[in-house]
Length: 207
Image 1 (tube, rainbow, N blue to C red):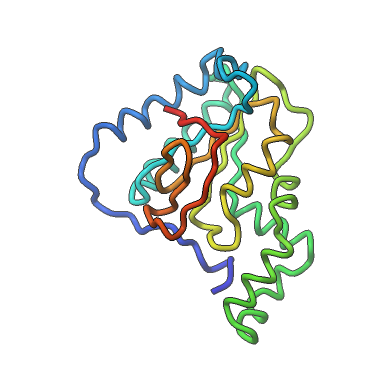
Image 2: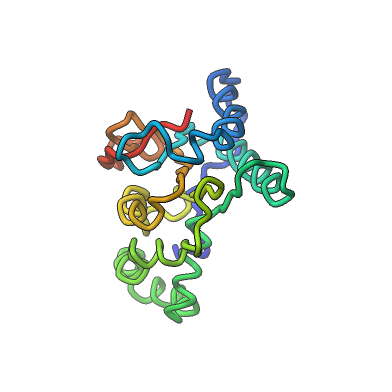
């Protein structure tokens, strides 16, 4: 299935109330507007990369919260300026730049999904994705990068590769990865599936 059709986003569900999730979700605003967060203080020499891991079935709640914070930022009602980069949109942007967007469906139909994945991974490299996400100049002490859409771009793009390639590009501002799975400080596990886990040691849990 082509990236224009595939979302990998879980369908909305009537998940049981999770107080810890609700509390973490509500705490995002105060965390990303805190002075020490915006200045990357208290992290030693580490890059300010943070992960907000969440149950995949709560994706719609996370999207709503991100959209609300982005709108408040645009309206000048926050002490930070939030830049949201949805990896799905970035993937399509890279495909458009490489002039292959209109060939994707035909490639999958002719050669299959595995061939499509291989082709896209060669074109939408982590370096190309990060370059498409960047803006200049960054305003240190004010700009914050939100990365969303992790589930939608899997398996074409892997979140840990984006972080690894982006840590030097965005080393002057805090980055928040919204991750539909778990992060234990050492390992990112997408959708709770251990077979899709990846080691990543340089991020901090946002909340």
